[in-house]
Image 1 (cartoon, rainbow, N blue to C red):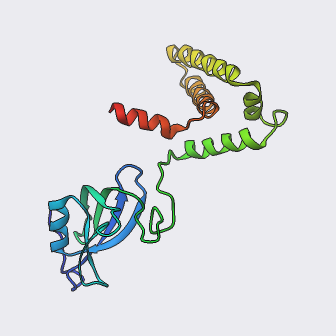
Image 2 (cartoon, one colour):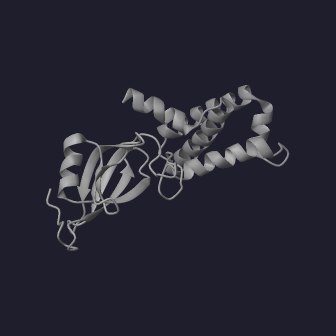
Image 3 (tube, rainbow, N blue to C red):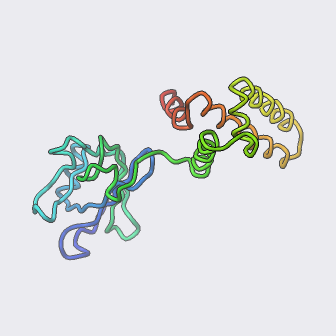
Length: 198
């Protein structure tokens, strides 16, 4: 990998650290050739600290290391993207990221939908919310609904109407998210099982 450490005249390049699993940005640091070599050798992300004027391995004092997964060079060869697996919080303040954000998996809109389901489960009443009404009816009704939607999805899969198939698939996924919460789980729990199997 060729990195242009001399482009800025200080022998350093910016390095963006991204969680290899969640894809969240954790921090920004700087590297010189020596810190890059050390990172590749030890598989622990090592920076050049501008304030200490020395190599600095993230976690050398706290134990919150960043274990190297992959390194990518940008198109101008003067910025690195490091995919890492963090041990503990990344920021010196104790936050997961240097932007004060939680480093959790996000499933895009499905994560937002999980939040809506949780809000309706805890705050809404069945008379005004379909989701709340299912929770009020209990686990048997929720599980039955997932079964019904699964059968309807299978039926539509055998036909050639893509719109109906996608609508039934959406209904199945929606009701499955409700069932997960009724059992005390989320998509993160399913992701964990799938990763273990992988």
